[in-house]
Length: 274
Image 1: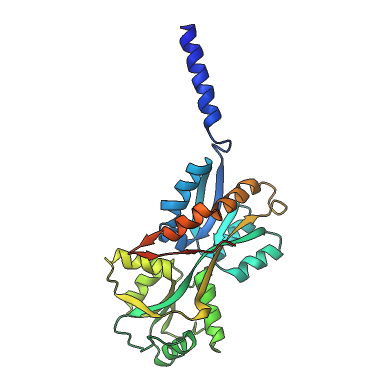
Image 2 (image 1 turned 180 degrees about the vertical axis):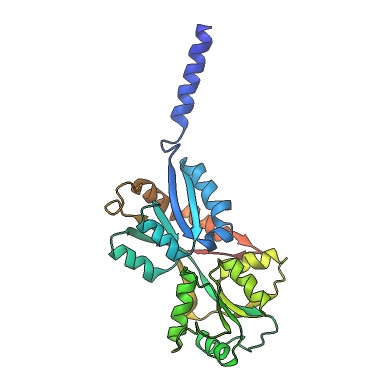
């Protein structure tokens, strides 16, 4: 019995030494709805990071504004978001640090295939002006998300005030998929990131009632970055885990995996770590 006990003890020690040193650790992260809706986090990033490092990721998917607020309130260790201007403001405030670009896609304006406002192929500025002139239904996220922030900037760039008081402009206050469904119900238009649109199209069997009508404009570029919560702002922030996650995200292996992650044969995100 003593020999068996000794052997079992030795095997237990070997297994313990074989486990990653970070086993049992948990990285808390706030991120955007697009990384969640598309399946990128749940299907690729979370399980693969756990497999490679032994670190579990617990994440909350919100609009970028809410995700950044969670960082400011010291509720997370890192964020994966897509609103560069807001991100840099939080860096300047000392809330976040080490902003690292990891991937991008683009925004698109979608609407009914019949395109009642006739915006197909227009520039973003011309499309927004046409929607406003024809009072076509437009559904806004209205939730301070990265997509919402971008939409507001596009009205401004078009030389227009955000039409918040007009009946045809609906501020939904919903996540992206719910916003798209509202646009479908109202036979109207909305703006989304391409990755979420592809996911939406996939749920419709590749034949969605709303289609991409405006795309390719340089202002529609959509950058995603990882930022660590600054331990000087939040003493309990696990900066070491956030840094390890960032380094993992920019590794050639993970960058390739992000590029290979597809739905309907289409890339949802394009890796671009420097």
